[in-house]
Length: 402
Ligand SMILES: Nc1nc2c(c(=O)[nH]1)N[C@H]1C(S)=C(S)[C@@H](COP(=O)(O)OP(=O)(O)OC[C@H]3O[C@@H](n4cnc5c(N)ncnc54)[C@H](O)[C@@H]3O)O[C@H]1N2
Ligand code: MOO
View 1 (cartoon, protein in one colour):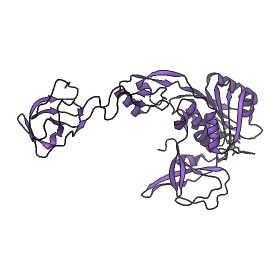
View 2: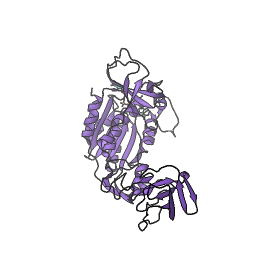
View 3: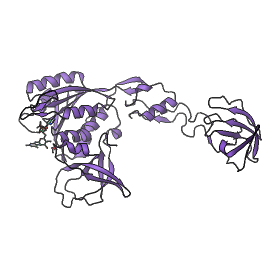
View 4: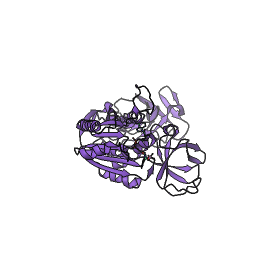
């Protein structure tokens, strides 16, 4: 059996990141992966400006000044220069005139006719946002291989970027396999069950703007049908995911088909759930992932193995592609842990005055999806390692939980 972390690194090392890019208008780039490092075009702030509505004054040895002008955000102040004893009425975001020593908020002033006065001494440089105090022209603004967030869109807009280079989205086809599986439109009959993995994974993967997800439907346990479907999908997909048939059953044809059409790696991961996991390539360009059919095993291997590889393939940096982990304290104990595989319990988080606590939810078997619905995290329990109450453990946040 393979250690999870070693297996993940081996999978990532055997994954070739895309190099295909496209230029997208900034407003249509949220969720895509940036393909270039973008530099600071202009110092930020671009010019010294006021942080308050109030008065910009010159000479702090006095407490009263003559108001000589009104300056609003957007006004050009390059021709205005204050002499000692002079002030301007100024608004938040307006440029600071030359020779300003301080800006005093209007609530701290008394204004009579064209004169403004204060009662307390003013601090030099107060309430002035200085040019370049946040960003300097030429510095790195946003790093390549990162997902464009709404905040990044705002930041790039503030620097005048109207369009940016992103990695082209990848096409992913998703199949379920198994004679027992019914689509939701079909009537139940003895021995059959509804296909839950495909709707679950489709809805999850569609959240990634950099994936075009195709619903491949349910494949029966039939060698020729599976072969034809995989062959066809590999023609127009960068990625194929199949759930079911990753294990050792007589009807687990997907592995045989993948072996014949391309390459196959079949692993027993030392994790629970998610032991059987296979992957390979068709035509050297289409990456194929075979997930264990048990719904929770499909879910866990998507989070722990498949998504990191897909994210890296789609252009994210290795650091961003690896699954996120946090730390939480065990609100349980395992005094005599005999479980050989690394366990990933479905857990709930509680925030208290003593910190973050994690506890398993009800329904921990590989076929019990209800546990995933209640859970916020996967709690990592290393194999054959006892856990004490209060011990800090690694936890993996689940999609949509935070
Ligand atoms: N002799 C052994 N049997 C099994 C082993 C093993 O090592 N030796 N491993 C077990 C583990 S662990 C898992 S996980 C499963 C994985 O099995 P497969 O990937 O081959 O998947 P199936 O056999 O097709 O299905 C397993 C289970 O999941 C249900 N299933 C499958 N697809 C779906 C779907 N799309 N929606 C809902 N439910 C699905 C299926 O009906 C089975 O109940 O193998 C164990 N067996
Ligand atoms: O690994 Mo299986 O995934 O335990 O159910």
